[in-house]
Image (tube, rainbow, N blue to C red):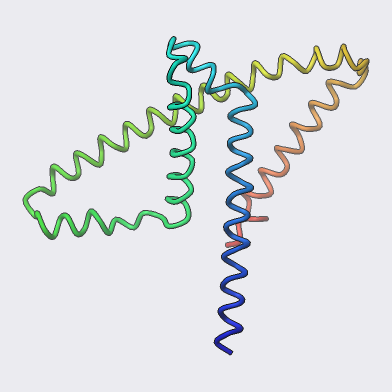
Length: 163
C-alpha cells in the first residue's frame, strides 16, 4: 500500500514538473518572440548587458512560479515580529514599499509587453498580403478575440476554476 502511494506521488511530481516546464517555456517563448528583451536593451543603450536581462527574466519567472506554487503565508513576517516586536512598524513600512515597487515594475513590464504585442500585430497585414489571404482576415482576427473572451468568461465564472 505504501509503495502504491509513493508511485502515485512520484508520478504526480513528474507530471507537475513537466507541466511547469511547458508553461514556463511558453512564457519565455512569448517574451522572446515579441522581442521584448532586445527592445529593452536597444531603448536603454545597454546591449552589452542583454544576457543579464535574459537571466533576470528567467529568475523573475522562476520566482513567480515558486511563489504561486508555495504561496506566501506571512510566516517570515510573523517570526520577525516575534523576534523584534518593536520593529513592527518598520516591517510594515518595508513590506508596503516592496509592494509598491512590485506594482510599479509589474505595471511597466505589462505595458511594455502589451506594446510589443501590438507591434507584432502590425505583421498580420504583411502576412496576409504575402500569403494571398485577402478576404476574411478581419473575421479571423475577430473570431480569435471572441474565442479568447468566451474562454476567459468561462474560466472566471467558475468553469475551470476548480472551486
